[in-house]
Image 1 (cartoon, rainbow, N blue to C red):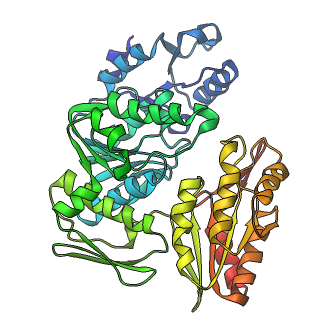
Image 2: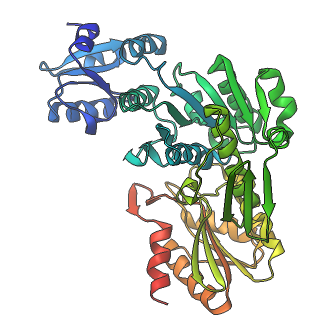
Length: 459
């Protein structure tokens, strides 16, 4: 019995044990013996009869009821994937960059849905097919066999476009396999993931290599940041800079006041509220990308294109706003907070920094927060294996007017009470849509917006 025979019989490769059935070939994607043993037991419990895994696990493949298929290299795995997943029936759109990936990939996917185009989204907030969330994902960029499985499912549901967040770590770990894009959006290139890449240059090179390696012959690249001209121009002739597209197509973004914008593009008109120019830039990108991909101007647009936890605005009272945002890099902080200097009202921020991640950005983030806000409430944000007090101490040392409240829940409660008294704006940064808080081996259910609603109602 071989894989080709199983393919003809309707078997599917699955990379999540929760999705296994009697018609599954379980791809165990791990390099560790203990994890292989763990997942092998899950397959047995699900009564799965076939496992695909690395050849190095042959000595651990002990269950006689299971048929094992082994591969020795990523190339061999890619060859196997070709037999199971022909994906040339869907347009692939990669979105990469330091900040803004989710706002654009998810946002343009939603814009497609609003205008009756079938599409899917694969990224930070999960796997979506049209308006429905199919499942959550463990990584922004999952393993490519998992991506292929989701694309295959989407194709069968008549999706024509796939928006995929392509991360630098996902690329370096081979999670994009040999998937090639028809369109790619590059948002910006700043500093991130230095715990993994070690240097900014390595990080930037990974992005450039991603763009080069996964391009089709006539792929089009949309670039948000015009400062990247020298870095990106040698890559391809099919590069479109957002600023040039706006001029050539007479797109107007009118700023009516500090927080109200109106987008005009032919018959398309969209008014929205945003405290950050970065939000308006991402909305422009969504409209431009829609035009590039479909060759049409969207007829319908509304606030549904804004993903949860990205500059999400909650109104506390007539004079007070709460913003929940995923911002967790210095550049994202500057984009999120930069406009606040124009406002005279009280400005408070709640934030922390994740443990086991880029430590170099912490002091910079605290300095930026101090520059644009009156009060900095320092709290925990997924400390993971690090001592949370040490992370907070670093942030406190670099904060102009900091208060240390370790409990994120209590920090939000304190911030809302203070905002209700003084009026103004409270920014809760770093976690956005996330549903958990991680302390060492403990994963606690936690969501910033849920806490905001709870404490706001009790005022």
